[in-house]
Length: 317
Image 1 (cartoon, helix red, strand yellow):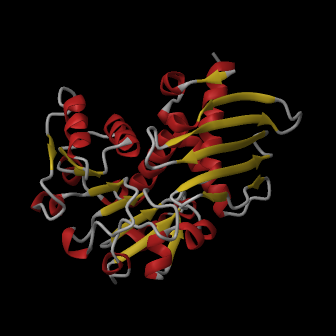
Image 2: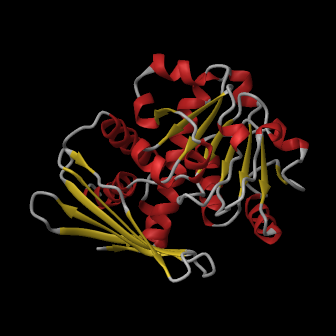
């Protein structure tokens, strides 16, 4: 069975995805032997701006295997293309294939939302939740997915957008204007409205830092998802290594090899997001009175989680 882009959008239940993501990320951080995931292979092509990526994993506990093969060509449209395949780990039978672009976008945004629930929502008062502002930096595929997921699952007081391609920001604002009461475009990244923001999602392919310490308020939560190679980065060193900042990652092993912000700043990683699931003491230690950064490079187990939701949505129908 093949799930194209529209089918992924139709059948990928976000509550179900969050539930499975929480489980597999928690088990990954506990080094559960039934969950196996090698470091992904990233093969540069020609000028090293283009990449071929392969990401396999096995979940013997749930009975599935998954592999995602994608291309990343920033000068092409779409930038990302590829396929996710889900197998039965007992029989080796292929269960489904699905559009990798939409799965990647949705599971990345859902993982960011899980981190936001843990590191931001958990410490907010009801009044702070009612006044909360969200900023999306980068308004292409990942920015769009983050806006969709974050506004489906939480009611924001205000939403701000910024993109180096102004047309992308205008188009995204127009698409959501009827649904969101307050959605505005920042004039630049020194806009005072950025300093009012409670949650920021950076979704760009930048190789230059876009956000530094003075551009955000203390206590902000940032989901940095754009960079996935040592040369790429969205956040400046002064923000990464501030004594008021704690950095959480999806995988220590992957982050120290692939995340430009981590590699270039040499920041100490406070925890993996899976370590924070069902760990209130560690969660409060990391998040209270702190700026928090969730640096995600993307894991095969996140693709696995999305593929499981799709498969079970059809088998349980």
